Length: 222
Image (cartoon, rainbow, N blue to C red; front, side, top):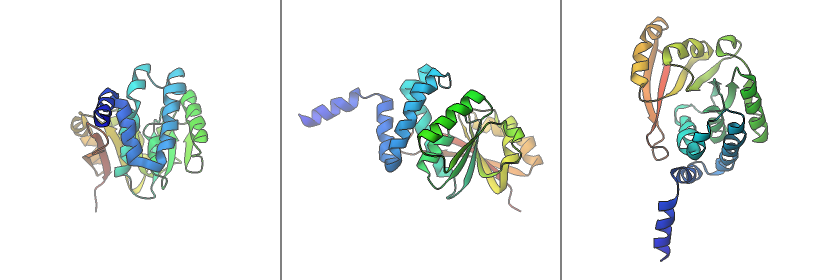
């Protein structure tokens, strides 16, 4: 009887509830902070217009887990700039699950920057995560080992903003979707001019379905 009850319980769980359990299994000690961040997104994030109300029921599936698995592509101890951070995706989940990282959330809009600062303070991330209100093209004083972005712009334009922020030997790692190959093709002129190479990676095995698609851009080795 108990086994049948467990089966019925799993069948009636929503996909997002199941994804939250997957996050708890995958990230363990970091899960309470992810859960608190989820509360910010579905609460103040929706109220202030940073998150669409339709996203509430798929926040873990489509946003938090999808962003956190970016950790697989970021080296140990790296500095990270999250360009156009918006509501903090992917920068905040990445910072939560990777306490070895130093993360800058770069966001040009005042109301979003204020939201990010409130979240960072509430989650106790202030020692490792900073918020800067600026456009990427104006943030010439910054650089990092990895520059991330999610749903900011197509790759040709995105690289003109992000690549100048990359330290020597570093990379741009952008979350992309099914059009990743087409975006790389469209960016070939810029890539060749800067002697860069782009590759497609998939991450999140056992966490997200479909897997998260990344485009990684780095300089061609001498």
